[in-house]
Image 1 (spheres, helix red, strand yellow):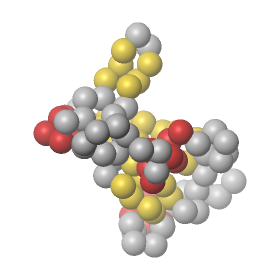
Image 2 (cartoon, helix red, strand yellow):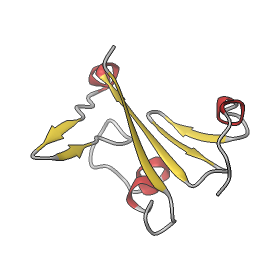
Image 3 (spheres, helix red, strand yellow):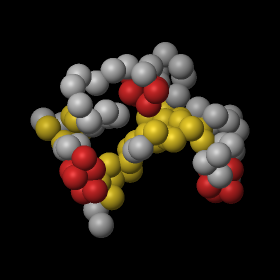
Amino acid sequence: MPQCRPTALGNTSSAVQRQAGIWTPKDFPVVFLFSGESGKSYGHHDDWVDGVFEYTGEGQNGPMAFTGGNKAIRDHRKNGNDLLLFKDFG
Protein backbone atom coordinates (compact mmCIF):
# COMPACT_ATOMS: atom_id res chain seq x y z
CA MET A 1 0.00 0.00 0.00
CA PRO A 2 1.42 3.43 -0.90
CA GLN A 3 2.35 5.75 1.92
CA CYS A 4 0.49 9.03 2.22
CA ARG A 5 2.70 12.10 2.59
CA PRO A 6 1.16 15.49 3.43
CA THR A 7 3.06 17.13 0.57
CA ALA A 8 1.47 14.75 -1.95
CA LEU A 9 -2.07 15.51 -0.75
CA GLY A 10 -1.43 19.22 -0.36
CA ASN A 11 -1.03 19.78 -4.11
CA THR A 12 -4.62 19.60 -5.36
CA SER A 13 -3.62 20.25 -8.96
CA SER A 14 -1.77 16.97 -9.42
CA ALA A 15 -2.33 14.58 -6.51
CA VAL A 16 -5.99 15.07 -5.64
CA GLN A 17 -9.21 15.36 -7.58
CA ARG A 18 -11.33 17.62 -5.40
CA GLN A 19 -15.06 18.20 -5.73
CA ALA A 20 -16.30 20.45 -2.91
CA GLY A 21 -16.23 18.29 0.24
CA ILE A 22 -15.16 15.13 -1.58
CA TRP A 23 -11.51 14.47 -2.38
CA THR A 24 -10.32 11.52 -4.44
CA PRO A 25 -6.50 11.27 -4.41
CA LYS A 26 -5.19 9.69 -7.60
CA ASP A 27 -2.28 7.88 -5.93
CA PHE A 28 -4.01 6.58 -2.79
CA PRO A 29 -6.92 4.13 -2.37
CA VAL A 30 -9.17 6.46 -0.38
CA VAL A 31 -12.10 8.85 -0.74
CA PHE A 32 -12.05 11.75 1.74
CA LEU A 33 -15.37 13.27 2.86
CA PHE A 34 -15.37 16.66 4.58
CA SER A 35 -18.45 17.83 6.44
CA GLY A 36 -19.10 20.88 8.55
CA GLU A 37 -21.26 23.84 9.38
CA SER A 38 -20.20 25.78 6.27
CA GLY A 39 -22.06 23.31 4.06
CA LYS A 40 -25.39 24.37 5.55
CA SER A 41 -25.20 27.67 3.65
CA TYR A 42 -25.27 25.57 0.44
CA GLY A 43 -28.21 23.43 1.57
CA HIS A 44 -26.09 20.54 2.84
CA HIS A 45 -27.24 19.02 6.13
CA ASP A 46 -24.91 16.14 7.01
CA ASP A 47 -25.47 14.37 10.32
CA TRP A 48 -25.78 11.07 12.20
CA VAL A 49 -29.26 9.53 12.02
CA ASP A 50 -29.90 6.18 13.78
CA GLY A 51 -26.21 5.23 13.68
CA VAL A 52 -25.74 6.12 9.99
CA PHE A 53 -23.98 9.26 8.77
CA GLU A 54 -26.16 10.89 6.13
CA TYR A 55 -23.90 12.84 3.76
CA THR A 56 -25.50 15.21 1.28
CA GLY A 57 -22.93 14.77 -1.49
CA GLU A 58 -22.41 17.01 -4.51
CA GLY A 59 -25.07 19.14 -6.07
CA GLN A 60 -27.41 21.84 -4.86
CA ASN A 61 -30.46 21.47 -7.09
CA GLY A 62 -32.67 18.48 -7.75
CA PRO A 63 -31.79 14.83 -7.25
CA MET A 64 -28.14 13.91 -6.74
CA ALA A 65 -26.46 12.38 -9.77
CA PHE A 66 -23.98 9.53 -9.40
CA THR A 67 -21.12 11.35 -11.12
CA GLY A 68 -17.82 12.75 -9.86
CA GLY A 69 -17.49 12.61 -6.09
CA ASN A 70 -20.95 11.07 -5.57
CA LYS A 71 -19.94 8.17 -7.81
CA ALA A 72 -16.64 7.82 -5.92
CA ILE A 73 -18.58 7.51 -2.64
CA ARG A 74 -21.06 5.01 -4.03
CA ASP A 75 -18.39 2.85 -5.70
CA HIS A 76 -15.64 3.08 -3.07
CA ARG A 77 -15.88 -0.59 -2.03
CA LYS A 78 -16.07 -1.87 -5.60
CA ASN A 79 -13.01 0.24 -6.43
CA GLY A 80 -11.08 -0.95 -3.35
CA ASN A 81 -11.04 2.47 -1.67
CA ASP A 82 -11.51 3.34 1.99
CA LEU A 83 -14.07 6.03 2.81
CA LEU A 84 -12.79 8.51 5.41
CA LEU A 85 -15.01 11.13 7.03
CA PHE A 86 -13.70 14.34 8.57
CA LYS A 87 -16.12 16.65 10.38
CA ASP A 88 -15.30 20.28 11.08
CA PHE A 89 -16.63 21.25 14.49
CA GLY A 90 -15.20 24.74 14.20
